[in-house]
Figure 1 (cartoon, rainbow, N blue to C red):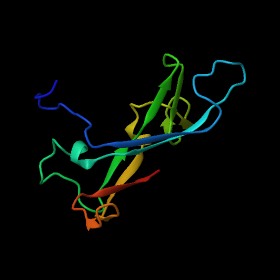
Figure 2 (spheres, one colour):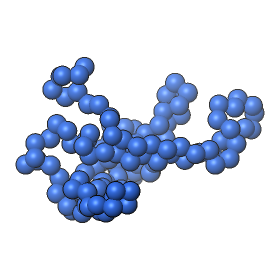
Figure 3 (cartoon, rainbow, N blue to C red):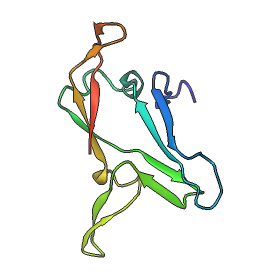
Figure 4 (tube, helix red, strand yellow):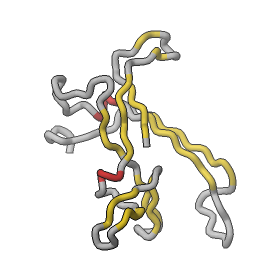
Amino acid sequence: KEGDLFYYEVRNQKTATKILSGSVNNQDVGATAIWAVEIAMSHDDTLAHISSSSRPKVGDRWRINSLRVEKEEQINWSWQPQIIWDPAQRKFVGKVNMHLPDAWGYLQFAPAQLDKQSNKNESRIIGEIDA
């Protein structure tokens, strides 16, 4: 709850969705919806509980992942393949599992960029996702 040490609230995130074809929530056999989502995470939110001495610097890389779960956890998918070593099978295999951070992509922190709307240089660090 708000006020707790690790309370996290997304206040400055920007999102957008677009249906590219079909329609969502259509249960007809063979119906398909193709859609896209964009998320601009605000580091004012994500770094709110990190001390200034521990904040990422340009060039730092953090692990990041996003997973969608549908139909009561029967369908899970991720924005990128999650390939890990499976010791039981003695080979690399694909897994969709939010608890496998070694298989996540990277968020690399880049220099501040010009804010095109306000025409000023933002002091916040902008990240770039690298799978």
